[in-house]
Each structure stands twice: as structure tokens, then as C-alpha cells.
Image (cartoon, rainbow, N blue to C red; front, side, top):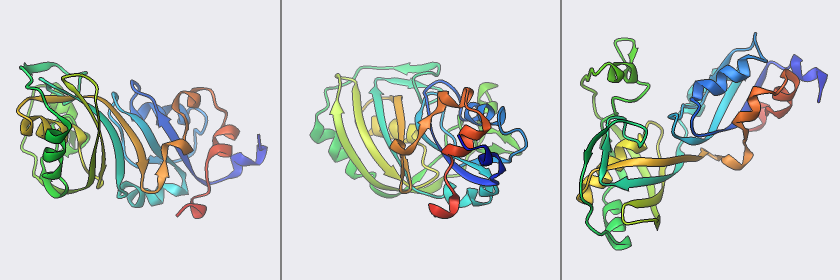
Amino acid sequence: MNPLATLRSSGLLFVHKPSGPSSYDMIRWIKRHLKDVKIGHSGTLDPLASGLMIILLGKATKLQSQFMGLDKVYRCRMRLGVKTDSGDITGNVLQEGPVLPVSPIDIERVFKNFVGEVKQTPPMYSALKHEGTPLYKLARRGIEVDRPERTITIHSLVFLDILSPTDIVFRVHCSSGTYVRSLVEEFGAALGACATVVELVRESIGRFSLDQAISGESLKTMTADEVWAKALNPEGVQ
């Protein structure tokens, strides 16, 4: 440990958020040890999701928009035959239905139709705001509001595996602002079924990968010196 680490004023911390805790739990755990340091992030993950978060410390928060705009890569497990209000398996089930057998050829044919620039409507369960209130808070109160479509870019979609008659695993490389939960619902519709997310892992943000990250759970007990010792100098990674 470096006692002088606490004198640093800027850093990037790569964190592997586990499934369950929220993205803001990661930030709260850091704030326990860096009480007077401004903290930002490169984009949140749903509680169900795990994977890479880039935490911006001190003066590095000025780079937030730069990091927020980077492409993302996710590995996703989707389940056909189930639709929930949140778009993932933790939500309330709205619909269940039969699933026709699908083959890798069927899946890859559907995926080809989504590669490139596509329109997407953000889900109600998202951190986007409507008149200052996060959409997910409105959704929890049973309120739905209009959300304008946005253009996103799907750089690639790779079918990985069929784990069961209902569970499909794929990897997507997409632009910032893409909601994989919404993509999964659209994939399901194209395959003739409703669908929801069972597992989601963010594997990379721009050129930064999950294997560079420290455990999110470790943030609960790390000292300020240990946090700064793990943080990278932003000037060295831009």
C-alpha cells in the first residue's frame, strides 16, 4: 500500500459489478473510504446484470461524457416464452407462452436483420428521466409515459449457444445507449415468442475489458490507500 496514494486527485477504477447489488452500491461502497472525493461512472448496469463498470474518481469525472459514449460488448442469456415488466427475469411476469423449436440457423437469420443502425424505444425500467424523474421510478408506480425512439448501432451479433429449448446465449457489440433488454424482446418477437433476459454480463467498454477489473465486493473493505493504488491514471489510458 502506498500512503501517498491518498494525495492523488484523479483516477479510473475498473470494477466487476456482481449480479444483485446496484451500480450505485458500487459507488456508495467507494464513498465510505473516499468521503471527500467526487465520483462518477461510465454507465450503470441493472441490478441483475454483472460486468465492467468504470468508476471515475476526482478530476477524472470531467471525462464522464467521453467514457459514457464508448461502445459496449455484452454477453446475454435470453429466455423465450416469458415476458416481464422489467425486461429481465427479476420482473413481474406479464406473459408466458409456448416456444417453437429454434435452430442456430433461425437465430442467425434473425440476428442479421438487427446489425447496423436500428431504432429502439428505451424501456420504462431505465435510468432515463421524464420531467426530472427516472423512468424506473414511474414504472414502479405503474405509470407509463411516451419515450421517443433513438437510433442505436449494433456492430455485431454473435450466436453462442442454445442451452435449452428456451434459453439462447449471444454476444452483442453495440453503441452507447443500447438497451439489451429491449433487443431481447425484439429478438423473441422475430422468433415467434415473447422473451426476457436471464443473465447479462458487460464484457467491455471501448477498449477496456472485464479482465482488468477488481471485484465489486472488495470495495466494501478496501481502504482509501487500496482504492487509489488500484486506480489508473486517466492520462495513461486515454
